[in-house]
Length: 430
Image 1: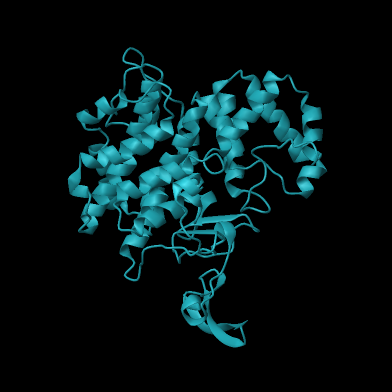
Image 2: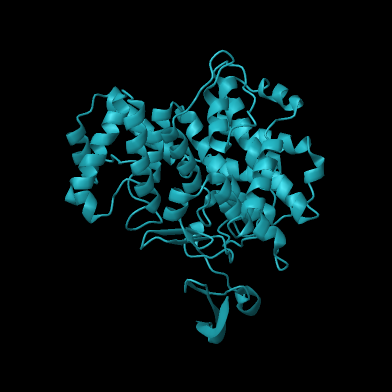
């Protein structure tokens, strides 16, 4: 959205009028798309913290007020009342589905939940030490090779089938990579099960011992996936949009998103929480002394899973998962020293004025790590679960780029800081 308001920029004695763009939530930006053509200047914004890369109607975040909405609907309402599959439809298509639409979408998910048998051989080609995220990224691209009909999306029906295949098969791939890593036979999906129970079945069932999760565990997984389904223009989502802008297909773009999410500064945050807890246990660290070191900036000790770059007050997703973690731990009666440590750190941080004054509350990564640990999901699968949840958001973002008639290939500029022109020196004179 835009208005008639402009911003004035003075450069080299030249005055330039730049349009002001205003979003539906009154977010304001200065459109500098003609800056270089008019002045020869570009803007420099390392990490893009102050740069809007696109206009999007998918997700809205207000970090100061702790607001997260998908297509205008508060995350609290979706976590309480919706399912992951319904939320996926909302993100991708812009509206909540009616009964016919959700039934049709669920049928597509069931239809496409199996992997081509040829793909099963690929899992055995990875070393046992392979990280599940490497397998997931590679297998998403490999999967597209077995379905050439979805490489080009000519119609809305083709796109819906392709998005359903990706959302359905990503959980099958994820579970198969886990089974391969522990030497267990892969479990085929069960058409009678809904999305989350089906994934848990493929993760934890054995041919001689079916796994039947409690309602609390299913609900917690459903909420984890919903809360991670999209989060505006973060690193992996920006990567998906960047790749999509080249005209790359849906599977290739989302595979790139998996690679970006793999980074420890992005999707690996909940892994860092568990690694911190493990170090505390291994070193037999006194927890009160640990928290005192956290307060000391000179100590170099960091408290992982507390505070958030975007949310300056509180993470609305954390509030939801805290309640879910209470239910899951009470139901499973898990005896785990790491979870005991986590609860102690949480208790101290919620009561200590040092953390409260700085809004260093537990974030979504803290609670999601606790829940997945209690459910028996290994640490190296945490980011894979994140990727399963984020898939609808990536698909929605890819679709927004794909359907934009004014879209151009993304091509950031730079400020060059290397050598000025110099001559080639032959090898014998170097």
